[in-house]
Length: 553
Image (cartoon, rainbow, N blue to C red; front, side):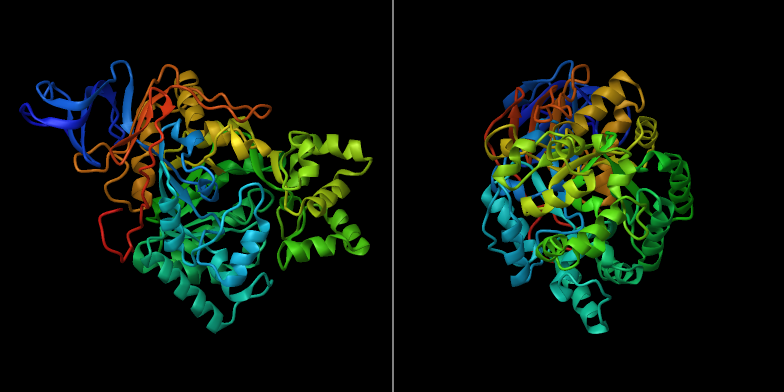
């Protein structure tokens, strides 16, 4: 918002001078100055109106882009208890981490707390909270550099009331599940998030998800989903998401939009057509994505979900039974009838990369393909998968090469698609070096701005910035975030459009992106000349249903 007359000789805490301002609204960049006072943007000027003003700190941004901080629509939060700096994202300009896919930090029953602690790997932390709001507050108390926000995972109320049972809730159980959703919404949840290929999310039927989304609707919460299939039943899964949105009366978003497996790549056009027809009819439907041709999840995505019922301990116990092992291996070699078979979809065990083990004895296998490990052990890929899950005490972190580069470009060009790393914000040091990761953890946003905006011209810079800032802020119904407007919180990134680039690769994923010079979160500088300042000014960003006191939204 430009001032109409020169600002008198006043002082600000920070003035970012002479950069090309991309305000997040989608218009072309314009040279100007941005002033910060306290935690907010105090002035935005395009015609020298701040020439006589002074800042306690002044930053020369000539030749650089100045934009709102980026919003990561799909992040993970537990790592912040080990390191709250969030460097892999912050060094790309991300100032808000949105969490909660399928399973969120709360609400938790006592049994869920015990289970979560038992399943912790290299990063361990006590659980001192019960509700989602308490979890978010605990993150901020521990010290975080970026802002944090969360959906309530659809699995949380299910496990809270049903455990890991594969059945529908009773009417009383469903009512209690809805009450948990309402409580989370009043504590600031953004809506309900499901992950429908994983146990226990896969056990939830459409009517259950509609009921949970309806509980969030009066609070203007949205429904976001890792849909039930991104492969053989991709189109039916999109239909289910649209049905939930219509019946619950909520906005909806598709997590990490993609068509998985070569035989399904051609379905993307029909999926896009379904979404755009729904949007044209007035349904609020969007998506997010990461700009890579490989997904990352666990070896649970290579096994039928029936064997996983009851949680990890029950799963591993079944896998030790020779008869069950034989049945599981047979199903792993065939298309999943009611589950998503990642192992079959990749086409070859050479396309499965093992990146995260809990058991120290297995950590030397990190970075090897499933084909390599199977050969080392003299066993089939299917039997190797089963053995690794049992031996590791976890689902084993895994990268699957599943998608088409042409489809990635097509998704990138869609104006209703924002971006999410589907990864934690980490650092190439300490506990994080005990496992590997997907390069998206270090490069998602920089890859969009470097490879696809600057180098390949898939998206104009101003549109890419809008889709990293104001688009997700509007989808999430956030106020005072997502644009460089006077009065908004001062989440600001200064970067070089000519040099910003991802450096993380599948072979060497733990490498920071380059090209981001300065980052402010709530008016506090967290990145200065490309390096972390040590500041941790992150806050909880709460959804529109929040019933608490204070301005943070």
